[in-house]
Amino acid sequence: MSAVDPDRSILVVDDEESIRSSLSRMLQRENYQVDVAANPQEALVRLNGAQYGLVLTDVKMSGGSGLELVQTLKQVSPKSVSIVMTGYGTIEMAVQAMRVGAFDFITKPYEIERVLVAVKNAFERRRLQVENESLRKAVRRQYGPENLLGSSPAIMELQRLIAKVANTDSTVLIMGESGSGKELVASALHYQNLTRSGPFVPVNCGAIPENLLESELFGHERGAFTGAVASRPGRFELAHKGTLFLDEVGELTPALQVKLLRVLQEHSFERVGGTKTIAVDVRVIAATNRDLEQAVEDRQFREDLYYRLHVIPVMVPPLRTRVEDIPLLAQHFLDRVNRTKGAAVTALAPAVMETFLRYRWPGNVRELENMIERLVVLKKTGTIEMEDLPARITSPKDTILPEQDIVFPPEGVDLPGILDEFERQLITKALDLSNGVKSRAAQLLGLNRTTLVEKMKKKAMMAAKTAEAVRLSDD
Image (cartoon, rainbow, N blue to C red):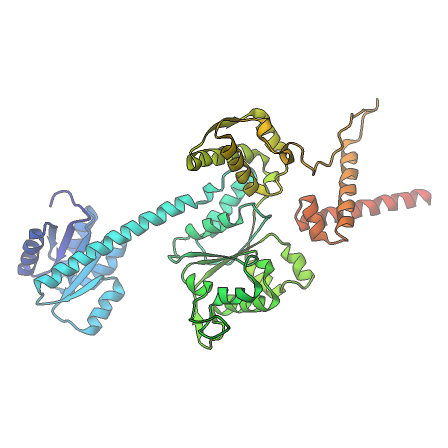
């Protein structure tokens, strides 16, 4: 046979020459490209040289087993579909054929119409498989870790971590401030997983009323509560073989924390108002902008659930800690908004970019994205200038350092000491404002709680050493 078209090519494998010839003539009349082989060994030689769309094989042949050929097909030609034929048609044989990967099963003597329908359906199955794989590849490209835009060390480390853990079933806890891109990380973890064919199902635990969240997660049976006029599956069922993304998991009530813990432990649950236990295969990815470690200490979050979720922790850095990524992100959003809104804004003026680099972006990447969209929609064409910016960007209220002339004494200054004292004052003020709640103080300072605790320990040790030095000098 000449060049093989995988959408029309068939390899017929049978040790009876009359069967090979009759099938070949019949399929060629239907405009299929047909090649033949007398045994599995000859078939494998041909499969190594070409990718056939369909392999039509006998089961029992003098040169080997057609079922073994079907199994081998998964390695040598994974995009080929197979149909098996046999004169020993039994239910057990059909089940065995399907189990090893055959698409259909035909008994001899075969009917022409039966063969042609099976072949047509097999090629349709192959077409759908190829399309599905192409779509999955496109989605993986769209949600790949490289789409977390940036070249900062923090983002590059995040990309490496996603690539490492995406193709596992381990539970992931994504931590980070609002707007930092936690859902984008969760999407990347799901769509880069090659073993999960199910959907990505997000749930915002903080946006659904408490009395509805249990039903939303686990579903309900008819009559379980007022308004439950029909049974309904929950998000766990909908995410079977896929990923359930629990955003703002720290907002779960104690009762729902217990139910979630059970699902993570046993991979099963009951619907609200139901008694049937439903088993699910779901990867759970959770996200929070709360300090769950502090919430555990405050008895607001179950410790056992925290450690169940905290199998693989992923920290998404805030935008203010990766300032070098702002120009790339701004240009990306500018291009996208121009395209979607039909605008023609060419660039951001240098002064605007400088202002963006100085601004702290409390709303993180989401705030930057929304700001670019607002500016482009209002400007429509030309360059974004300083007068286009809102006052909160050009004159932010969170400026801490006073604007004053700096005078250096002749002997110079102790910069490390000045910075250390200023940091101590900021930490003390943040703790006063938060009534000693370290997680809130850390939030005011733009730090992780653990970082704040380490700084407090370090400063306490330094203070203790200073006091000891003073005491020894007095002695």
